[in-house]
Image 1: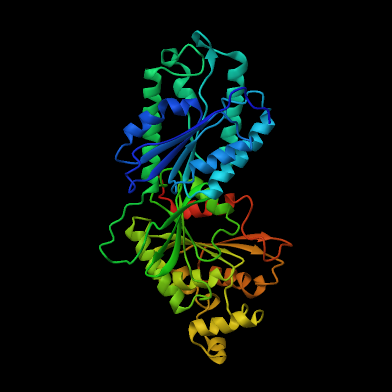
Image 2: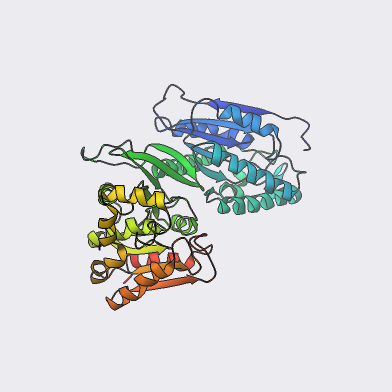
Amino acid sequence: MKREKVEWCQFYWFDTPERHLPRILLIGDSIVVGHGQAVARRLQGEATVGFYSTSKIVGDPAIYRELALALADEPIDVILFNNGLHGIDCPDECYRAGLEAFADTLRHSTRAMLAWRNSTPLTVPDSPAELEPVKNAIVLRRNAIAAEVMAERNIPTLDLYSAMLNHPEYRLADGYHYQETGIERQADLVADYLRGMLARRNLMLNLDGAFETDFPGKVSDWNGFARYDFTLNGERCILVKPNCAPAPGKPWLWRARFFGAFPYADLELLRRGWHIAHIRVEELYGSPESNRRFDLFYAFLTKLGFALRCALAGFSRGGLDTVNWAAKNTDKVACLYLDNPVCDFKSWPYRRASEEWKRCLAAYGFTEAEALAWKGNPVDNLAPLANAKIPLLIVCSDADETVPPEENALIVEPRYRVLGGEVEMIHKPGVGHHPHSLENPAPIVAFLEKHCLPRRG
């Protein structure tokens, strides 16, 4: 790593006694030094703002030692970061690799919501209206690389380059820095952007004492989106927010089991303004206790203003939880997405998982004879869904030996059609129980949006 002749870094925190406020960290270079304090003034009383500025380019191992100091004091809630005006001799491929590693470090080692701020133009010294041809071309390439890196990680971008481009009156004669008018304009843009991030981070609610919860609980990063882990009447829950404004009607996908597994559709929905939600129902197999927790979670999220009809996703054994609850709550469900679903506990776990079968019996309070005689499995209880015109999407791996489709999905499909229900099937020939979902989730997303978003016209 080739370093510059002079290397430096600075750390500042403003309004540090205001410990009740969210903490914002600006990461960058001398551009952050210029507008950092002005941003802090604009957000006084709303957030505690600090900045870490450095001459080191991403990819320099020393940047992580400095970053550790910037993150060492207290947890950070929001980070707006930038890098790219230094280390001009660094090749594009090295810059990309360094930026990817730096962004991933912020994602995985902090709980903060992240946003990228791109680099500002470089002009010819003493000619602030003329772009420096060689160095500014590097800035443009690095901004383009950063746009790709951030898009891959669902990290939004504040475009300060465009805001500064056609304003020579903002610039100092050195070609890099800004005079007061430019600094104040940057501070306005940055502060407004951060206010938007804070608004998306803070989920305001008035529950009227109806729920016992620590919501929003612990805030962390999940694939570039804000994830909230909280408890609701003692049950563990997860809510993931989009980085953009909620889609019309505030739709939500309810992942009944295996949150985070094969999240192709989840991530695409988040990009489109959906929320992803989950309440823990491990080892409940669609039993009355599973239904009770679903009732609780639904009441809570709709109290927060989410759509009154949700999209339910049942992966594997989650098919039992989703279908059993939906059949009792047809007015609360817009559609069901089932993925290699268990639709009869006499198929799984009874025939294939003895320890799971014992837990299933315990969840229902059944003897084995009572369980085998019970007619409340999804394969037996489709009429309420069909009568309510609730559409089903079933992703079916035809070589699934864990949850054989001929005992589950391929029973549901014809029975649902006979009952007058709408069902779409996506077959995956030669595929076993894993992987779930589709790496290209477009058909799943199209189905969910068709049935959950308000219809135009």
